Length: 382
Image 1 (cartoon, rainbow, N blue to C red):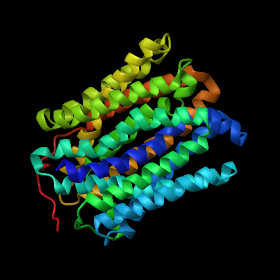
Image 2: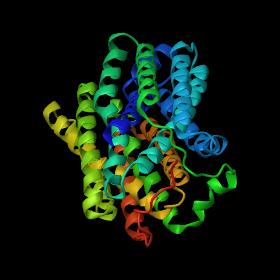
Image 3: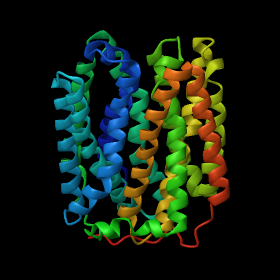
């Protein structure tokens, strides 16, 4: 199993680095382009909105392609978008190129999860999804701190060139290792949204939107919340994310997704509220960052598992909608977090983020229902 899934994780590593590293580059971006820090934060916001909107549209347009072909196309578009960002001379052009990069990401990540689900035995599905999505968490531990350091030492544009190189490496891995997989799915746009008629699906999507809205209201502007070395704090968060993502997959297989999701949401909300305490000293911040990352990322595999359980016969579409909900949350987080930062400073961001986390927890407690459909239904593959 692992040998075929690692290139998918590598592709997600490149995509995660390209998206998350923006949070560590806001000062150099704002200085280079002559814009405010909150305006620089909108690079992540635009990326997230483009991802959310384009994911179902591109999924419908590419439904007839083999999954391997689609994965390669997605990484090619992602690499091109980052190269264009590195070359763009003005803020409007930089924003436009983030849409191109987001289009590649919107095609790749849901497809990678669908392929992992299709290639894996049901009893190991949680761990397989954790492995593939682990590329995102590993990016936050390695790619983001490295990119943040490179952006400070050289320029933020050098970081985007680094992201493009990572995308090329993922492309080569997918081309060499991942088998050709065709998953039965509809190309009709109306059918892409059909799962929204299922309350179980809406419950998962609502939880995902609020979960990411809470976490990334703080994460997007984390450079404005800490007076400590930012790369070190991001590294601790990323290492914790790796641990949490892997444990989340195992715990989901062992204890079921409900417990994992609720524990992750509750703990993540508490640690967001503790940001002022974490800022008291670097050792405290490193422990805080690790625990926030570990507990916050527990929910990732569990949320995907919930989606597979809700739409076992329509897994690619379900996972695509889950990704869209995630990036709508990121989009709203970028706008709301920037507004809170401008109006109330770092305290406003912390209050907004923790408050949204509490809403996410309450929403999930009220709406979560165990699926009557087993997640162990196989997906047609040929």
